[in-house]
Figure 1 (cartoon, rainbow, N blue to C red):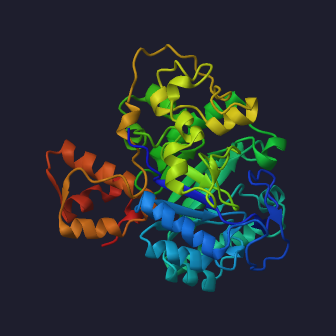
Figure 2 (cartoon, rainbow, N blue to C red; figure 1 turned 30 degrees about the horizontal axis):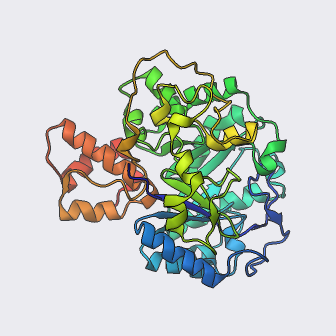
Amino acid sequence: MDFRSYVISWNITRRCNLACEHCYLDAEFQGAPKKEPALPGELSTEECYRVVDQIAEANPNALLILTGGEPLLRRDVFQIASYANQKKLWVVVGTNGVIITRNVAERMKESGVRGVSLSLDSLDPETHDRFRGVRGAWENTVRGAQVLNEAGLPFIVQTTISKINHHEIPAIADKAYEMGARVFNLYFLVPTGRGRYISNVTPEEYESLMHRLTEMQRQFQGKMLINSKCAPHYQRVLYEQDPQSPFLKTFALGAGGCPAGTHYCGISPSGDLTPCPYLPVYAGNLREHSFSELWNESELFTRIRNRKELGGRCGPCEFNAVCGGCRARAYGSTGDYMAEDPWCVYQPGKYNFVQISFDQGPTYGVEARAEMRWTEEARRRLEMIPAFVRGMVIKGVEGYARDRGHSEITPEILAEVREKIGPRFFRK
């Protein structure tokens, strides 16, 4: 089985200009935004370069997410992004969006950043600001989205579900689309870091929200991608609603389930490697071991990939291959990352099958390879699609063409399918 690090989320600093209630990193609030070098114990610029070298060697097409804390507070963030871009990695920045200015947006573009993610947790500025711990956060994030639009830098909007906002998720999605987001990511809270101390939704509310998510995907089809994060059970919900769901086809092949340690990993500010940033369990430190060594040989990564060893209901579940439960949520609730995910309400055994083999690999990111022939002009247009959604576009376009008897992807086929996949991802 080919386990490859398709997506790496790298917390390059603990420093942050917000004090979010749910912060899994328990970031260090610094007050007024001011760019500084690395905090004590964090990887230096040169050490970051060495880590980039190791990632590029392990997977030269990896999607690298530079986040924090607030990554834009690190003085050398553009140097790190530029170096990673030179190494042919696809670089995106995960930010709260508060300090994005025209100058910051231009510097991101100059350093090779391909996209940005912003956080928006409520339509009520007061509620958002209270959740984020700083007055004015909502206004500045919305302004940041406008700046990114003007600069022509693609962005996604991310929302973390909790008791304070679960009732307004569809409205937040509408706002994300209005702001110009290419993707709306809905994060289901994992009880880790400061997130252990805030009020979460119940498993029943979680189940209800996943059903609502299917409605949102249909609503925004062809306009904006809607993704669930930290909700691997969503594949089961999709199947139960419609075994032929186009969203199931697009997202199910590994991307819908928990990718922790199989196709995804996290790097802490000090260089510790974990299967997931929400999972405070580490295989080792990149100052002492190479990325490939820890990814391929460590006991932690080896064990977490063996879904036959999962405990409780997760082990025998027929959706094990495309779900696997959230390993970080299992750890946060029980102290055992191989335990069952306590948020799942499903009782295994209803369906006597294994729906999709886990061996089929993920569809997200740039590593989702084209299976059909693409003309040179079609490939040129594909290269203009943001890396973090390109894999999904490839699958959707090729599925559309295959169903209609085409053997080659041409610009004409792209023109036909662009409304079904999402016109915002294509450039003429």
